[in-house]
Amino acid sequence: MSDGTGQLAKGATVLGTLAWLEGALGPAAARRHLDRALGRHEVASLRAVEATAEVHYAELVALWQAIDGGLRATRPSWAADAGAYSIDSVGQHLYAGILGKRSPNEFLEQSVSLFRLFYRPGNMAVVDSREQFAVLRLEGFDPLTPLFCERQRGGLRAALMAAGGGRCRVRHVRCSLDGDAFCEWELRWALDETVPAG
Image 1 (cartoon, one colour):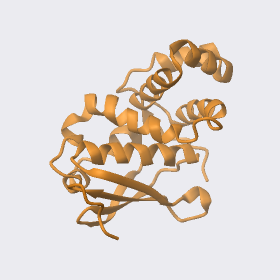
Image 2 (cartoon, rainbow, N blue to C red):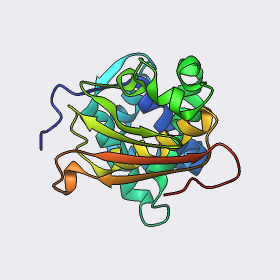
Image 3 (cartoon, rainbow, N blue to C red):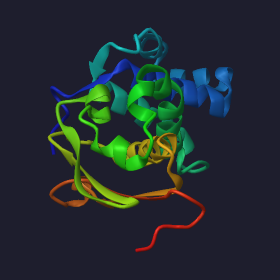
């Protein structure tokens, strides 16, 4: 595993995380939590980031870990919730044309990679795609923390829903942090009220 040197994330990932935390805890409680965990100077620096600017991925990981330290016990799914919020809010604002497709398959098969708009280097590649089913594999990017994997799970579910998928399910089926060669997510959705088979 690397230390994340050279890996970058868009400021939108930081701003989306901060906005989710304020919505979950309230602005004052979120500020107190982050000031204790990171320090006021670091928090002010993160708040000043522009959505389209790039930050060192390690800084984003530090933010996630600071939040996780206070929320894991009471809200274990917070990272997935924050990932979904990021897609539903900041992602829809910046990349509505990429997310607003006629179907999840059209979203997944488009030439523009949503992952590359938020992180670099690397990509999230479709390695299996069928009717109402797909498998995505993370390539060329070290997640460093399971919080990234959970955030992707929530974000992918929100992206499928934005593209018209119903009853969407996303499972993180392989993880490089657990010794697998790569991370993979299995995606299933329905186009009506039935749950996809298999």
